[in-house]
Image (cartoon, rainbow, N blue to C red; front, side, top):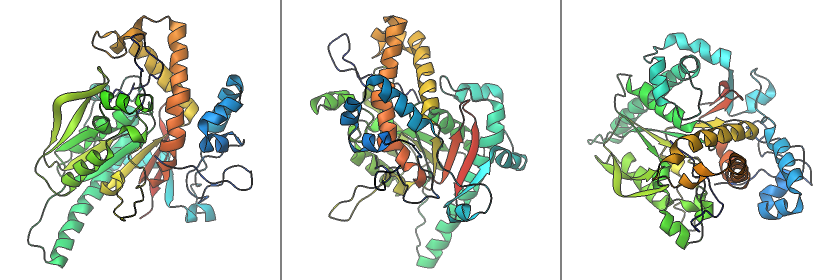
Length: 404
C-alpha cells in the first residue's frame, strides 16, 4: 500500500495538502511521575520525561510551550525508548503478561516445520517501496507465522462445525477467517499483508485470500474539505467507520459478494464508481493504521469495533525514531518516482528544492504521523493477537503472542 497521504502544508495551488490515515487514549499517570501502564506486564511506552503526558493531554499547547528544537529533541528521547515487554523466562512478570515472548532465534527455529513456496523474485514483487524485506526474513519470521495462522484458521472451521452441531443448526454458513494488520505509517504493513496473502494462498486449506485496505473507507477529499478536516486525513474522524463496519458485518455474515471502495494513491482520493469485490474468500486480510481501536461506547449499548470481526490480529511495532527514518527514506524515493506522475496529487513536490522537501517531510512526520501514532495507533498495540517488534534494520527481532 502506498501510504504517502502525508502533506499538511498549503500546496502551490492554494488547497490544503494532506496526510496519513486512524483511535485511543494514553496510559495513566501517577502524581506527576512517568506514565504508569494499567498493566505493567503489557507492552507500554516508558518515557522518562513529563513531555509525553503533556502531549497526550493537549498536543497543540504542549508544542507551543517548548521551543521547536527542545520539542523535537524531547519527542525523540521519549519515543525512541523501547517499550517495556515481558521477559522470555517464566518470571512473575512473564507469567502475569497476556503475551508469551519469542526471540528471533526461538521463532525462526520453527521454520523447519513449514514449507517455503516463495523465491526472492516473489518477495521483491510483494514488498513495498523502501522495505528491505528479503527471503531470509520471510523464512525466519513469516514462514512459521503462516503455519500458525493455518492452525488458527483450521481450528476456527472445526469450532464453527462443532458449534453448529451443538445448536442444531441445519444451515452451515461458511465465512472467511479475518486477519487484521495494524501499525504506523511506513512500518511495513503493506509488505506484511501482501506477503501473508501470497503465503496463505499456497496452503491447501486457504487457496482464496483477499486483501482490503482501510484507505478505501476514507471520506472523499471533497467531504474532508467541507468538514474542515483535510489536514486530519488518516485520523479516526477521516474514515467512514460505519461503512467499514457494515462491510465487515456482511463478510462475516457469509454474504457471497461484498464491495469495498477503492482508493488511489496517485490522485490521493477515493476513485468514483470503482470498487473491490470480495467473493467469500477463505481468508480476508484487513490492513489499516488503527484497525485495533476499541469500540466507541454508546448509550444504546450496541458499540462495535472493527477488531470485533477479526479472528487474528497483528500489530507491527518499531521505535518511532526508526519509523521516522523509514518514512523520510520512502519520501525521498517517491519524489524521484511516483510524485513525477502528471496525475499525482503530490506532483508539485517533485520539483521542490531538496532541502525544502526534506524539511516538509519532517514537519509532516512530526505534526501529523507521529501525533497520530502517539494518540491513536500505538495505544492499541496490546489489543493484538501477535506483536511483531522490528529493529532499525526492519527485521523482526522479537515476537509477542497472546496466550490462549
